[in-house]
Length: 172
Image (tube, rainbow, N blue to C red):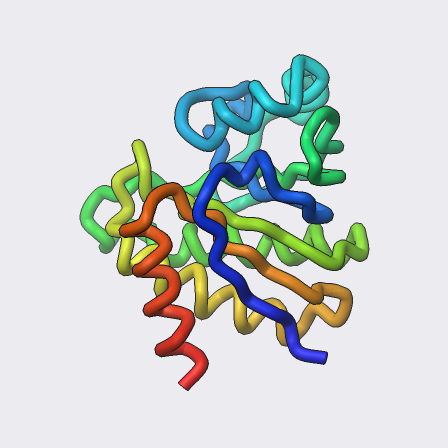
């Protein structure tokens, strides 16, 4: 059965999935945007769990329990800061999605939700980031037999519209 891809407009912290992906910073100790919202919603246990992980390199991912979230797990990934597009940013962003799928396979997860990694404070151009997200997730889902559903959690109508357009183009 092929993986189902969906757009969700709203807070990723509300989703009932096996894992939500956190667009984290390298310390994994919380921050602003999605990262801060996830830490607030999960409770102080998330900070305690992250504090023993030793941080995370850009393009890599680590997993913790979801604690007070509706999601069983949080996959923390560190996206690249956009410089000029010629400093490895596209490859590092794709690696965030690949590593998240690797962890999902290891933990036999069935559903994942991703935010628009690196598109906020890290200034990755939204359309380019969305193309990387959709194409990488489609390729990884094909190699992830347990994954039934991938959600793209979009904060705002504009982001949701761009993800929807990209998904439609990728399907045709």
